Image 1 (cartoon, rainbow, N blue to C red):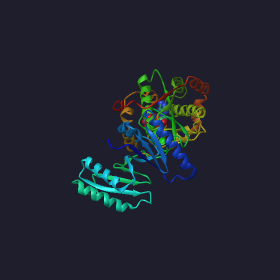
Image 2: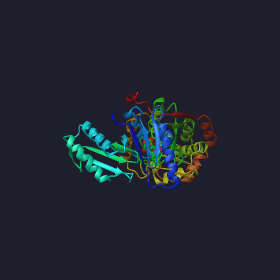
Image 3: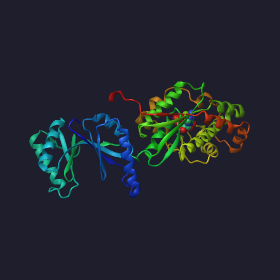
Image 4: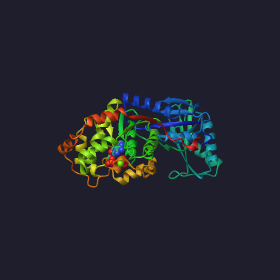
Length: 395
Ligand code: ATP
Ligand code: MG
């Protein structure tokens, strides 16, 4: 990428119109600047349907890795800016082709400036002719080893090769904020990714039961949150709730079969309050229908009935294999499968009820003062702001 001095960024979701479109672009601009804030020499420019970032010597590889994780970008390319003059364009394309070390190429030109004296087809022919004359390369329009893109604007022309796929979706935060229940498992980090992709700013809550759950288990959750924060404007707030007393009280009051149902009802009650206190309009989980006893439709209904806030379940209809594939893609899988206990595995009931009923659940709950315990747990809440892990390659 040595000769390229500018990044050209294309937006996603172009069906967005009017005010939404303006908000989309403004938010994306803000998120890109935020994620690249450590690169002090960058110069930003916004054009109608593009962003341009002038590198001024900053590390192209590092910037490339960061941009791949910004939702709202459909694709981007490293480019070289030259004057919109046919001979200059041709000479630079010949140089790019010569330096590429490739054997076949294809020209892809677009004339945005209709006053430019040649149409895109003629530009393709002219430049390709010069490359054929000055190198040993051949044209291959189907599977070229090198694509040379030429975008002619009035005044400036951008030359580029690779089109790097962006993360797609909507810019983080444009659709509001949600509180995700984050366990140390495989599913909830994937749920975070899906929510962020839809433009939601994600905050997380984790329920830990020390000393039954260890510091390692807590650290694992923070590590997962840190990985996800890269897609979330480079930060994620994690609320840590001590769940031990509530969990012990549940076991005393209800015993084995209803323990998980009651545990989940307490978790969502707590989550609703944290969401309301932190400006989140919904809570979210990594539930997938039928995966475990607490995720049957009857269970979900029984758990959901104790709260009034909307619950988003982005993985509800996904197969485990699909979820695992995504976890691998976003890089959380290896951390998620580390064998640290979570609060559900500690008090793992042998025969959890798969069709809990509301009346029974409520009658168990009447045996202890859970409102007071919830208030106490909220009083002791600790929140941590996590940031992306430091990548040694970029140091
Ligand atoms: P995961 O892989 O996300 O842990 P799971 O298949 O193990 O999911 P459950 O343990 O039944 O499923 O959890 C279902 C959902 O409940 C999780 O996706 C998460 O949103 C929430 N949850 C479970 N345990 C916790 C916890 N300790 N703290 C916060 N949220 C939790
Ligand atoms: Mg779990």
